[in-house]
Length: 78
Image (cartoon, rainbow, N blue to C red; front, side):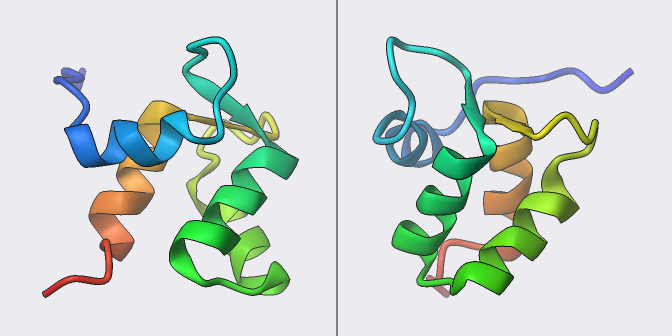
């Protein structure tokens, strides 16, 4: 079983802009907005990324799923 460590500050900062009341998940519309606004994706790209990283296919992006996206796709730096 993979141990989940502490969420990096930059990941938490971006996620918290879209999360309400300190929840650790975003419903699909909020997650799509996050991906579009923070990563300059269009609707189709954001939906594709959401579907790819929504590992449990529950239409919700958890902070852990977002962290996987952030670490895999990157933050645009480098």
